[in-house]
Image (cartoon, rainbow, N blue to C red; front, side):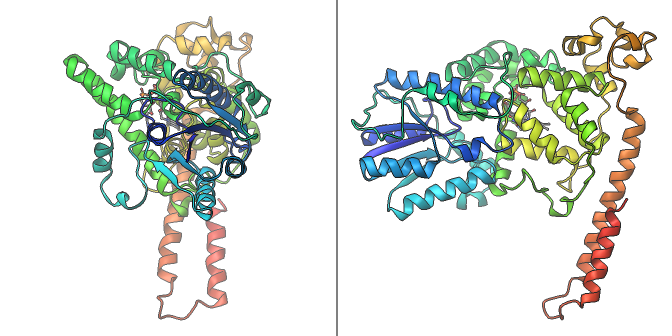
Length: 496
Ligand SMILES: Cc1cc2nc3c(=O)[nH]c(=O)nc-3n(C[C@H](O)[C@H](O)[C@H](O)COP(=O)(O)OP(=O)(O)OC[C@H]3O[C@@H](n4cnc5c(N)ncnc54)[C@H](O)[C@@H]3O)c2cc1C
């Protein structure tokens, strides 16, 4: 029986259990499917597609080296399965579990159903320190460690492909270029592919990690001292388990690196922790983690959004971060937190559109991390404090000479150091041709803090009232009048 290996966000041949297991069972048909129903969604963009195409080119070469071939199609997965079934008869399907948004979650459900209805086996393998089903009951730490302890599987030594290939599939990767997708190409981003991922890990563990902790928040220095593994982990060019194992080995060999690499290992764990959350609740792309906060901040100001998005707010560090992101697809953690807080807390924009805009721009877009991190910044988890940042202060602390700002906000390239983070104080400001600041940060943060605090209090009060007025099962349903009073209160509480 043919073994179909379905590559998704796991574009590598090492530590790829579906490929390894399939290779032991007989003929293997490796496929990657560009599903329009996924790629046409608002969170996906051309830079993601570029990265995937680069990764596929290498994957295809690697499979050829061991006698295999990669086949691709632009189609919906069920149509591909149907064609394989018609051409080759019964087959097994092997894939990694995917932990994405509700879109991939329901696609996987449909695929499972399709396979089951034809009595075909679909083998799904764990790919991260994230679990599905009954294992969720164990502690996260226990699951994570036991997955890491399993050790990684090698790349298959030899593959046999079926003689007949269904018409829907092709091994001409260039055909994928005809699929049109939103967004602009990037020239200065990281390149996709397993060998790039391995080189990036190697250079990090050998040398680049040495100032990992001290440079973590510095916008320019962190570009080299952070691992820069995020796009490779997000698109699966490298397995997280392999990264963890290699890091632990490096820590044993070099005791001086222990502190730096321990922080790094904690981040890898956090990666899985946040992805586990989307596995348990795939709707967090559009819904607040805490339902009560679904309507928190409903205001919209298109002009403010556009100025933020284009890096034209007149606040140098925010603009530099957004322009760097457009150009390279990456900014560090602190800058991500700052741009989200600026848009959603300082400017009080609803978080959903900035979240989608950033998803398109981040080359390493990983839904589980992305929406959790955004909701943590904007307070819709209901448990975290809303985080306000002052980009002028961060600039003075983390980019004191303004090297990062000067690189991306060229209007400020020659401004004296003293004014780099507050150019509006510079006597020659109007000759710079740079935007006037969209807000006075301190005043805007103060006002926003009051507005959000009062919204939060209203939500809490509503909740208490709702609980008090909620009938117990034995009580009668509330009268029509009582229901409408509750609604009036809700209306009033948001009418700020
Ligand atoms: C609003 C916001 C959105 C974010 N969206 C994403 C996203 O879509 N994809 C993404 O990979 N990271 C995201 N992050 C987390 C973090 O900023 C990036 O992982 C990190 O900057 C990537 O660079 P690196 O690989 O050099 O990280 P390193 O510091 O070298 O960390 C190594 C790896 O650990 C993981 N990691 C690091 N920081 C975090 C974190 N705070 N939470 C969870 N995992 C982490 C990543 O897989 C990263 O590649 C987001 C953070 C914020 C505040």
